[in-house]
Every structure is written in structure tokens, then in C-alpha cells.
Image (cartoon, one colour):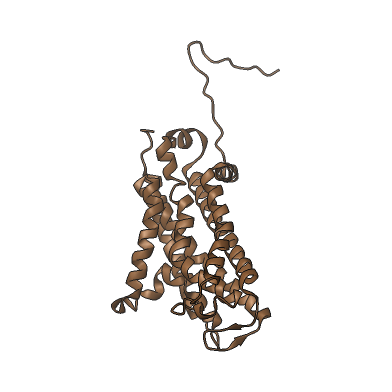
Length: 289
């Protein structure tokens, strides 16, 4: 027979609380994102915003000839989708990803839940990994919805005839579909780089306002830096320049050097910002709440 030993009188039995792993934490974070009105608004905006934009550009009497593919944007849907891509990379994408990434950690500061989560529920590593994966997954989802909506709307509004490339070559419609889709997908690496930047600023400032607004401002500053002649050597390594890497796909002969450089630069930016984010989170004193 086996005997059980009762706890000594006056002592409290020690209860060991099981901590959630990465998968459980990620599932919880995804459910939180799905339940937030802000998340739904961003996804809905990515789906619907291209519709009025496409109609507004198509209705212009004078097309924006000073922009890439602007000359043909009112008569060719592929050109219209590429015109929108050029502006989206400058202004829209850093904002759309920062709305969630800049707040995903800062919201814990706002609600004072750091102590409860990290001392009772989940380890810091699992917590950081789950929130980071959720933020980056959301950024990719928004980009995919925005790109699909823009391409389909542009083609329906302005037609799907043959596209004139950047070198003056005629690109058949069957090939243009592929090139335009690939051009939009090249925005994924710099978008993830800005996601890492938003995460870093949200953790560092503990403010959702800073985490959301600062990446947009920094993106604007980086564009100005890239346009300066004195910073020409630095320009290829900026995440904002990676948003322009698709230009080589539409030239004849095509070239992919800027895309490879932008891919590497974006990966380095993401690695640095996420590394700094983890360092700040790992060293954070959460005993105060």
C-alpha cells in the first residue's frame, strides 16, 4: 500500500501553475486581434479603399503623367494597379501595418496587464514570439487583401489590355497579370521591416500613439533621405527603397538586383528592430504592473 503524506498543519500546499506554450499564446493573440474593431476596420479598409481610388483616378480628365504608369492609368487596369502600388508603398503600407504592430505590445502597458500575464500565464519568450508572429501575419494579410482588391478593381474599371512597360516594350495581358501580382508581392519584405519598427517603438515608448504614428513619420524621413543626392550610396539599403524594387520587373530586359538588395536590407532591418525589441522586453521590470 502506498501512503499519502498530508501537508503539515499551518502550511499552504504549493500549487504549480502550468504556463501556456507558444501555440496556445499565438492562438489567444489571434483571437484578440479578430475581436478588435480596429483590426476589422483595417481589413475592411484594405478591401474597400481601392474601389473609390480606382474610380477617382479613372475619372480624371488629365492622367497623372508625372508618375510611373500614370500616363496609361486611365486606359489600362494594370497600369492603374501599378500606379496605386507606387503611392501605397510611400504612405499606406507603413500605416496599415503599424496600426496593429505599434499597439500589440503597448496595449499591455495601457491596461496594466504585464505582471498578470508574465508572472502567471506565459513566459516572456512565448509572449514575444506569439505577438510578433501575429503582428507580422496581420501585416501580410492586409497587404494580400489590398493587392488583390486593387488589381481586380483596377482591371474591372480600366480594362485588361496589353501593358506598356518601363522600357516601352509591349507586355501581353496574360503576362501582365503575373508581373503586376509579383510587383505587389515585392512589398512584403519592407512591410515586415516596418512591422518590426512599429513593434520596437511600441515596446520602447509604451505608447500606442507613438508605435502607430512614428513609423509613418520615419518612413517619410527615410524617403527624404533617399531622395538626397548626397545619400545615394545609402538609398538601396533603406526599407522605403525596397518598395520600389518592382520597377525592374517591368523593364526589358528585366533586372532583379534592387529586389534582392531590398530583400536583404528589409531582413536586416527586421532582425535589428526585433532584436532590440526582445532586449527591451526581456529586461523590463514588470513588478509594478
